Length: 115
Length: 110
Image 1 (spheres, rainbow over the protein chains, first blue to last red):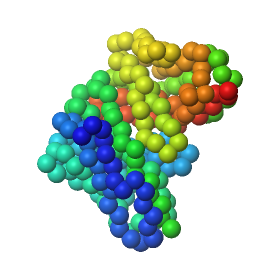
Image 2 (cartoon, chains in turn blue, yellow):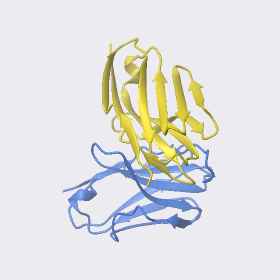
Image 3 (cartoon, rainbow over the protein chains, first blue to last red):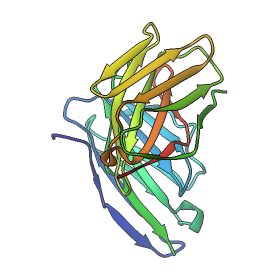
Image 4 (cartoon, one colour):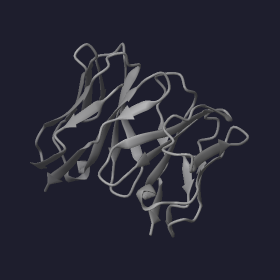
């Protein structure tokens, strides 16, 4: 696609429910990243994919968070048993490859509110 | 552990002023540094990318400099306009991931 596409753009869910956030990167981009931005905070790295594998999952805050990427393209971030502190904007980004020096392109984000 | 700091956290200036946003980082072993713009409710837009071997990059009214040895970067905005109002984030690039600062919220008054 022309840009990084994320869905849903907004999600309100009840505490304890599971949510899935989807990211469709720019066509041909092998590297994909998930970041989280809480209100008034900077971006927090969650996970990085190179192709379908995730060499770095170090940023996932707890075992309630998981992510997968299939076909080297679309990625899904799943949050199980959501908590109020999970409320944030979840941003996905992609780059042509993970070589240093490549610009990363961000989607518009998925705004998650846990009530 | 890399830490990125941006000062000031917020800035309000009259239209037409030249201004400087600052970014500092603790580990000079970086591959590149990017400056991003974020409008309210939107994602991030890359403004300038400086490779570690470069000292500065320019795009239109924007000029970004990088001093790796001192762990600093600046974003210079010339002749500011109300449309420049946004949050500006710097991000330091390692081998594959970026560490972000918390941003400078800029408001340019008409």
